[in-house]
Amino acid sequence: MQPKSRLAAAAGLAAAVLAATLVVAPAPASSVTVSNLSAITHTPGTTLNLRSCASTSCQVLRRVPDGTVLSLSRASGDWFRTSWSGATGWVHSRYTVLRGTPATTVTRGNTSRRMVAFTFDAGSDLGYTPKILDFLRDHRIRASFGMTGTWAEAHPTYVQRMVDEGHVLINHTWDHPSFTGYSTGTAALTPARRIGELVRLQKKVVAITGVSTRPYFRPPYGDTDAGVLRDVGANGYRRSVMWSVDSLGWNGLSASRICDRVTGAMSAASNGGNGYIVLFHVGSASQDANALACITSRLRDRGFSFGTVTQVLAP
Image 1 (cartoon, rainbow, N blue to C red):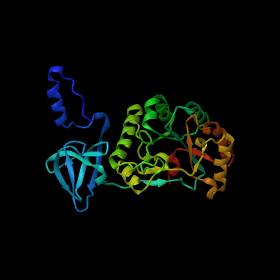
Image 2: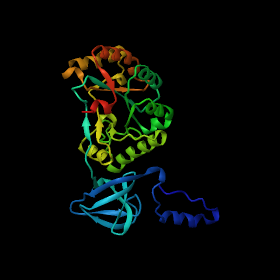
Image 3: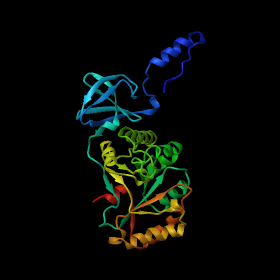
């Protein structure tokens, strides 16, 4: 979008002509710096345009051959900033494939240990977060929290408290879009948009706590595929953390039904549910917080201990 001219009325006509002919760079707010990220162009039978800014209306600086490896420096919307053949500009990320080791999807931890991981997604309201953290502290349980950037921005004190009390943070993106579009009926996000979501959340969490969310990623809605695993892996997220059982508290289950569901699923599982990763939510729409006492009591009676994702996945 081009900015409106603020020149004096006497220069209005000239400013309008100038504004119509100039192409401006992407707004800083929509652009994030990336590091240690590269891609290979994928344009079979043709070339990829390197443009002067992140828009198809911008000047073509170079035509990059198919299969060219590019080092990336920024992501803005659907575009990556890069340099090639003496020129620096932007390429549309839909025609690039990020390079790196794909993330591994995990749904369960080590089945040889009688340990379970409580994981909480935080992406809507503050909800029961204070109650959950108090419970975990009082019962000496370390858990894992998959949070969005918008949630972290709204509740920085609680993000810091999670770190201070030994919990693990998981990158749940900036504002919870489906990376594949499956659950939302939308188009899949381009690699640049995926990277932007990851980097914005990471920068926010580091700014608040000094702690990284790497290597853990949790896909919004659980929507994932090989392309998602490739893109998040390229950005340093080696584990895409899913779950062994979903409490379904977000779907209106009562606290007693949540308790029965979680503990019942573990009873029916191989090894009695050893290494299970349980999905909860902190929001006020879910009764997960009020089910914790029941779940914890039953599992401790069965000899379970509780750990972070890191601890449950450890060999």
